Amino acid sequence: MPPLASGPHPDRLFPAQPETRAVARRLYEQVKDLPIISPHSHVPPAWLVDDQPFSDPASLLLVPDHYALRLLHANGAELSDLGRGPDGPLPLDEAAARKAWRILCENYHLFRGTPVKYWFDTTFADVFGIAETPSARTADALYDQIAEALTRPELRPRALFERFNISVLATTDDPLDDLAAHRALAADPTFTGRVVPTFRPDRFLELGRPDWPGLARRLGEVADVDTGSYAGYVAALENRRRYFVEHGAVSSDHSHYDAGTEPLDEADAARIYAAALRGEATTAETVSFRRHMMCETARMATEDGLVMTLHPAVRRDHDPVTLAHYGHDVGSDIPVGLELTEALRPLLARYGNHPNLHLVVFTIDESVYSRELAPMAGYYRSLYVGVPWWFIDAPEAIRRFRGAVTETAGFYRTSGFIDDTRAFLSIPTRHDMSRRLDAGYLAELVTQHRLTEEEAAQTAHDLVATIPAKVFKL
Image 1 (cartoon, helix red, strand yellow):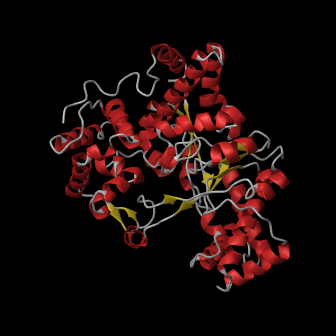
Image 2 (cartoon, helix red, strand yellow; image 1 turned 30 degrees about the horizontal axis):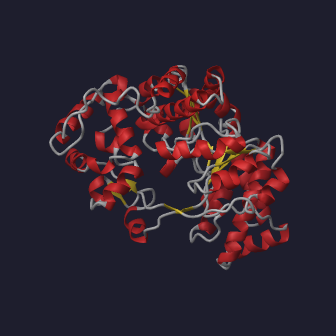
Image 3 (tube, rainbow, N blue to C red; image 1 turned 90 degrees about the vertical axis):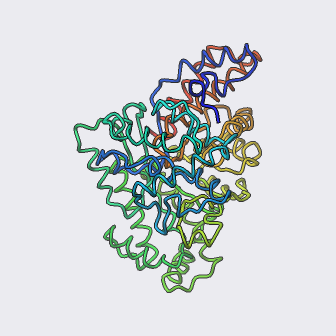
């Protein structure tokens, strides 16, 4: 396999038509170096607290990345050989790390045409100065080159945070977390970045989980509230939300099977809650309770100011065998169809125009963009359309998103790019991809004489800086 001539092409992702490409280049030049706002990620804050060198290329670039794992698994690779165990990523010795890395390189052709290859190629070039294509022939040499680079001070987590020009990084955190890593960063005068927690209560809202009664008790212990009653449970969630706000949180994050928000009256909510503590609630009751709690979450957001992000319609852990052997987040989460207009109506009827609610809805069901999300965001003051994430933070999907949403909701009812990444080194790559694609989309509008270039340049800037800062209350 031939080497890349000189890394990724400077005009990558721009329109092919020469006049439009020239406009896209000019627009991109005005935003390419702006600071990154990453309002939704899964980067462990402890990496920045400890600031230790990353251990090896596979553990850093491959093992946490479910995008890469899923396609390798589909083509025959064993997840155990890719560094995954029952409780998540495994600590790898050099032999195991080299084996996982070799599997990636030997199968690199599988990623052609996918955003994964784009992210890897750009990261290899921009972070490590690598212009050679991974293959069976180059696997060991590339491993050695990256492993050596990871020993240098400029490739430690804090140095990369500064090099990537990240102005805000939001992590994803469990309500029981004491946020010690966030406190340590905030108290450290040598760290000047802004890293904020995100309140992720999903497992505490799903009363059908076998471990839910224990979770409810533990929530009460951490909040110092008796969760033996529904009222105590709600008070405990409110307590933990306040704790997160006190430690810098700006948003809560929610992902459930559907987007239902139908409220219950308090007596019914209390009855179902008590039944769930006894292990006697039916499936229908637990679903009704969770939908009720989504409306309650919006109510809480109007009071404490946390932005509410909602990304439903994923069948988590579709493969039960993989779940049993390797746990969560290895690539077997599969999208399902979604209905939003009726599902969100109860919440929006109460809080859709509330001045203190920002509700960001993003989904991987593309069919709802133009039919449901854009029209609702074009009316309700509190609702913003989240920019593509996960399966569809890919070039063609982002282009489709802009085309589907903009004509009804414009640019300013969207959220700014959401990278949702577990792969720290891909953050600048993903945001750069978004900036290039938006420059290309805006350039099309300019060459069609629908926008002036000055209007397009202002919009490009706002998509990167102004809009995400406003939507996420930064």
